[in-house]
Length: 214
Image (tube, rainbow, N blue to C red; front, side, top):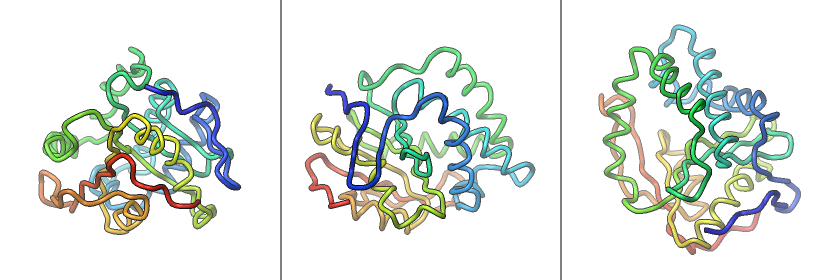
């Protein structure tokens, strides 16, 4: 599969793959953006929620840097983190995988079982073949409405078009669905978390959908 390249210039924003030096700022951006999100309030216990979220974001930052699946704006005020199809990215290194397996269930604490069961449930609704799944898209409040969200998504959406594979995400709020639809995604299933507490929409973008002007 083709390499999306080291740096992408889209209008004013400069978008690039995340680097090791970016991990603390990735964690900060994800924490600020998601602190009050429905998913975080559902998936993480009240006790130490912000600290748990920050650590999850750090772990995801390390995973994304190691695999080349996280893209950021130049100032890291916007972050897009993906899961790649098999063979499309560097495998997760053993030490990062071990940290994820060890720490993620502990961070979710009493919500870990519901989160795991929900992921199993969603697997049936996501595309069955190779696809890129958006794990997280975050923009700091001060930098919103500048096109950064679409900009950090564009490298992978273009690669999906080149490789002929869909992109997918699971949205916990209709506002996310509205944003994704502007980029060519469409709802394929409306569902709820395994415990019934969180509404979720599975949203998929087929390859070849025209990209909007950013």
